[in-house]
View 1 (cartoon, rainbow, N blue to C red):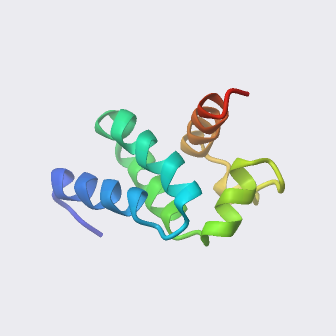
View 2 (cartoon, one colour):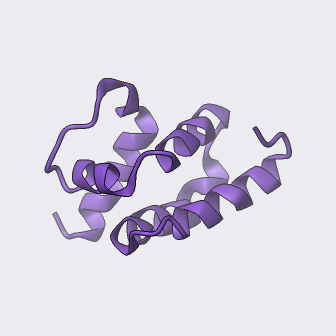
Length: 90
């Protein structure tokens, strides 16, 4: 795990924009740009966990096709989910 907070945030931002599935990039990337600097250590760790979830699973969760397992329903996930809904005009 990265210990330098600035490098950690840069790595998370890059990964948020470059996951492989453009639909997920267009949610996580703008969310990272808008909120990453304000996230505490717990939220950063939660973001890193979400970045390891397969794209299709995360996309299905964000589009409400499936409910994410309980361990992923963190405060950060709820923030990203709300952000996703707002960007889709829901």
